[in-house]
Length: 375
Image (cartoon, rainbow, N blue to C red; front, side):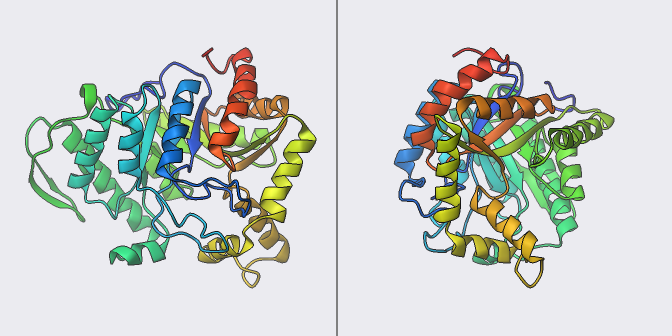
């Protein structure tokens, strides 16, 4: 799916599997499951390195990290131990051959000249397999760590627009550049080498607001949106709207979503493990802290809505739940593809423990459905 507006490297997006599958959140302790079970994901470098080698060999398309600077406490210290994402990507790219690895970069916290150089370095190490997930940030507690004042919502994206414009200029201009924006004033910037192979890294964003979606459509190759938890038709409408908006701007946009997979040999086993991890053993103190940061509390929303949000956040922080035996899991993924989605980033309670079964049982079913190429 070539992008009409850039020379972006489409190694991850162009050709290959019809439904791209990635792993999301492995750079964080506990991953995305807010659970107290002892087998929860460690997030250590050793486990990440073993995981990416397993994923690369299995044909998984990408690794997508979470840009986290301060965890959420609770009984487990949820996501308090995290690996910084560009340096994490560099290490994973050096250890693999095919998989794309993203860095999740807070535009307000990374000076664009430094970020551009870091990402080009990662891209050369990966020979074109580095991707940028650009984020503007929302957690004021994290911004306080840097002594940076969080901007108003719309202004965050105005700054991000200058940031990405400057980055792309540094990646493409043959000579020194000046950049004279409202936020950024850059003089005689020399940025060499350029990205690997004369292209630019694939860029993605997951803005949920109207201004965030507009930013993604204008600047990115891939857009992550939340799939409906109730209707494939509703997901299809959301995907079609995003792609139509991009086409109206003369661009093509790959649309992805996020899922949380619990796959076991039987439906009963899958449901029992899910209930054990994210209901019976949920780290509710961490869940409630995350919700409070978003102003979701018993005194701000109805009791029914509060409980719905608690359940969703315990099981992967709003990703679509994919729970069942291999037939059911594959069927859900096939339905998401039929809604027009180009890919999904999934998480597990323990990535390394659960990926082998997913690879052995689910991926072949997707191959037979024509969504994945044989490995």
